Length: 115
Figure 1: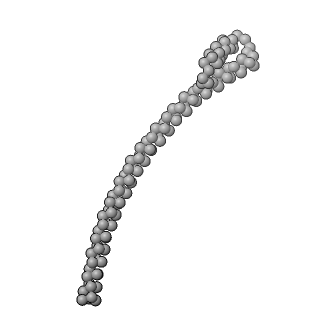
Figure 2: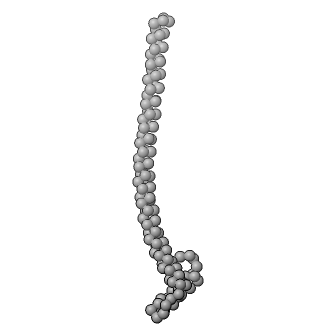
């Protein structure tokens, strides 16, 4: 738990000694503190394992959400590309129409007023 195997070994040995003498004799306050410390380290160890499992589940959920988001983003990106292509086509058509209209107007103007 703490990255200190020496401490863990000492705590395990000491708690086993104390548990061995619990029924035979009265244990001291120091012994009770050691047993409490051992109980806490066990609790921390189990909570650490439980939290790691929960964090893995959360990470998997986020990965799933990220995959959905990426797929949706790709769909939206493709739609924008389609709209952009349509806009380009419309712009080209409108330019041709404008050119034709300008030619017609200038032809009519030339025919009516200059000839």
